Amino acid sequence: MKYTVNGFSQEKLVELKLDNTDSLILRYIVDFWNTGAMVKKIHNGKEYAWVKYSAIIKELPILKINNHDALRRRLKKIEEAGILEHYDCREDGRYSFYRLTEKLNELVSTLPTQKSDGPTQKSGPADSKVGTPSDSKVGTKYPNTRIDPSTRNSIKTQNEFKNEFKDEFKEYAPGVNLTVRQYNALVADYGESRVVQKIDAASSYFPRAKKTYKNHYRAIKNWLRKDAEKSTGLTFSPAKDYYEGNKL
Image (cartoon, rainbow, N blue to C red; front, side, top):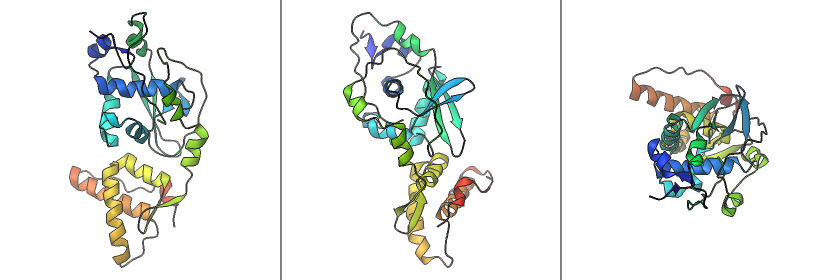
């Protein structure tokens, strides 16, 4: 049996009920963690890093994962195996932070001493969900993290992330304007496919509407909330949030 898959013990992966897709995602996070380019934060005395879902989807098309919900389920599976811990940060936005637990060592401590024949994976920025969180630099390193040059070439610095998420309006469809934070907030709560459908619908509806919609984010959010209530039979609070303060 081949000893390693993506740099991890195949025997241990099987024992933890993790497959090749899970190991690719984990390889991405481990490689990127050790570059020092991830946005990190201390929570309850532990170091977490911001993982950007859309970046994993973009950088690893081989996964054939094309939406945040599917990727989140995969990350949840790795959490349940005890390799990752999740922190849902809601400071001035909403972000998915993860930390690699000590159990990661079990995936590499049983490896043979010869050079690993598992490939190293291309890495990049890691999504969550909204904005750019405050960061902390802590020098935690993890084993078996020989990084391919292609990994380094795809890395964005923390400052580049912050520039990417400046709170400026963009036209996501003709006549529909949202800030990047507003768009990501909707995606985080309702999924990208639903948000894109509602943006397209808004683009057609706004010009014909009897009233003028000054806050496109609020309108689209309310439509998505009502759809969710219809599909689940539950009632969700229409409480105003931070992002509704950004008006055109």
